[in-house]
Image (cartoon, rainbow, N blue to C red; front, top):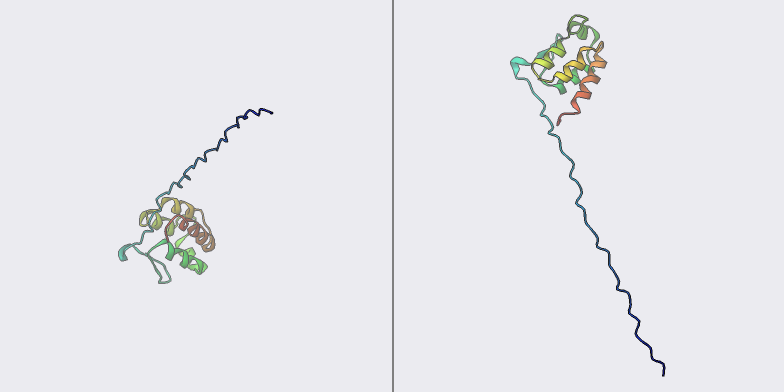
Length: 118
């Protein structure tokens, strides 16, 4: 009779699955859009009254060259001054200082609006 000695089986090692929690994205505080009160609103020479960057961008999109030139020249930029002093957005005011047309001003304001919760 053959004597079979039992062969020890190697234990099955199960690999532990380590669950790693996904990193939560760091949320940056989204600034609120500033709205000027009636006394600090921007009065455009064509009669429009603007109270925010949203209103400024809309007005610039369809603004006549003559109206734009009334507020922006090589020596002054009423829009940049108002955005800085009233709407408290120095970064947007800085980007408006170098514009030469209403179209480029509208694009600059549109870019600035991306940081706000609109």
